Image 1 (tube, chains in turn red, green):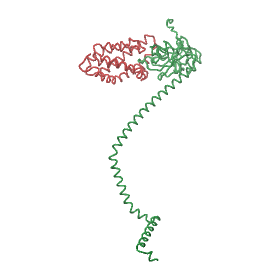
Image 2 (spheres, chains in turn purple, cyan):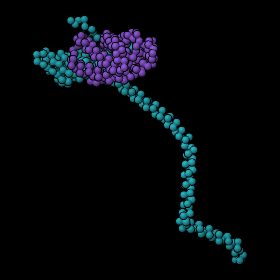
Image 3 (cartoon, chains in turn yellow, orange):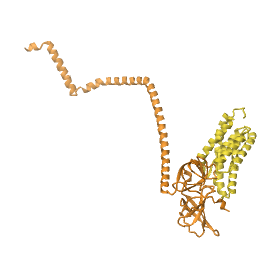
Image 4 (cartoon, one colour):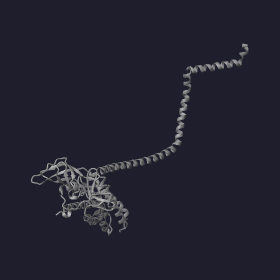
Length: 167
Length: 279
């Protein structure tokens, strides 16, 4: 229970930071998504059986705050949750590598779903501009910020999940 | 008589007086200065040596107490400096905010046909593909869906979603945004579209129109989404291809969307949703 509360509080804090600070840090037109990075890092640390409930709650909030339809964060975060479980079991000895792999995959999935949504809603898209000016800079920023976010979440996880205790 | 006066005692006193007067005379007239110097300089040297040793001795015992006092005073002063610096930063922020609000107030006064609610920008969209901002006023402040949002410079966007104390604004730079405009010099109408990169383009300008670079774009009021005659931007470039019906062009928006900190919501304009009429 305690771990869920810490995870939820951390999510809210990163959402506030994202909207007030990180959305304005741009390379070309791309920006980092530290909310997604937090969800990835938390899923890689948390071994709770009902973590998926917290993930859906986080996705619901992200979908409400964002102008994107709520199903996009729900799909992305649930995929992150599922892949994180696989990475936890396969890349136990190199968690940072797991973080980078999941970040890369999740950011690409999010970019793809964003573009698909805009395409479906009949927005006139210049795909090369969207890729070069938004998608790739966003992937780069997410990969750069994945390392510090992973380190911070790992420190927090030491308090949330004492060794040998599973929720 | 003389023998009576020149007694040995008086003679001795007279000699003493004469010697003292002579010495005084010599001293006053400066003849004894070398003698004084020669005799006083060892005394001065001894005095300064003793004085220095005393001061060193005194410092040795008193300085720790003074250092502690100085350190305490220094710490207190550093705290005061830090407090004053933070006060200066806060005052500078207030001043900048006041400047923005005064400018918005001026705009509201010069455009009295509308009623405004001023709001502060408190957040931005998470997704880099969308261009939205979040403001600190919501339905409790009389805001409704679709209300236009402006700054003293020009058009910002419209309210897309709101809760009791906050609202989400779709900027005119968003890929889903379209604004009906008229070119002030050319006197024709067109459509300004946003994009995923946050740039805005001019479209649907008839190909036979002589659209000039630098032409000013104002809202036309068509479509019922925005009130007419709000400044949108200036034409940067125009492109006209063969065998097409309309020209396109790039637009320089008047609003600096990367530095939006306060906006005005026009509350007495009811936008018309014509989407059910669109085939």
